[in-house]
Image (cartoon, rainbow, N blue to C red; front, top):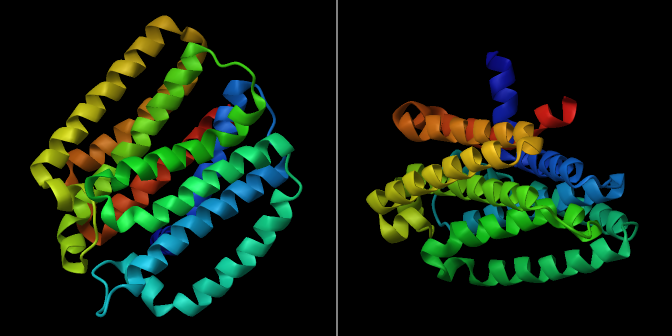
Length: 272
């Protein structure tokens, strides 16, 4: 088990689990939308998410003149050249896959890429909005391919997208809350460094309650998506556990290992 945790820790630091989670989540919504995502679409999504997250970490690490306070940023400081080379290789592969995807998906992807570019330009000046904008971009990336090829959505699926988005927002705010002391040392902007821990805790409680309300409504109004609703509820339950036991999960960055792993949980839906 220890070897597995060590291996997964490296996977997590490299954001590989985040990229895989995006691919699994996109497949989850494709199943709900009753559409098929071509392999090149999934490859492109995974590579794009990995490139964005790695670029974000490298930019954060580059701004520091001392060793970073977090293991993730220290890793990106020490292996910046190797990671940059891997990003270039990933980008080349990504471009070849993008060339093969459907035109309607390509057009939507260009629009999202433009928004991502703007995000990178302004991320150091958006303060408490950083997590919200990050959530919107991540959720948009996950549902972009299914939405591009689906002509009509039911209210139940729209609510599931909203639940998923709120879950992603909770994830980022939770990390912001736990990382606040280190972020302040490294001068990283976040919701918690901008508005403080108490406001962040209140925002998290509100979002947990909002998602619980959405889940209960879904279960009563739309029994056809019960399994999908349960999966997203389980994701929120794991994040709630981290929130309630922050002292335990803060040790050895356990909160990141479990917090990012929750986006692998839609695989249960795909398997059954």
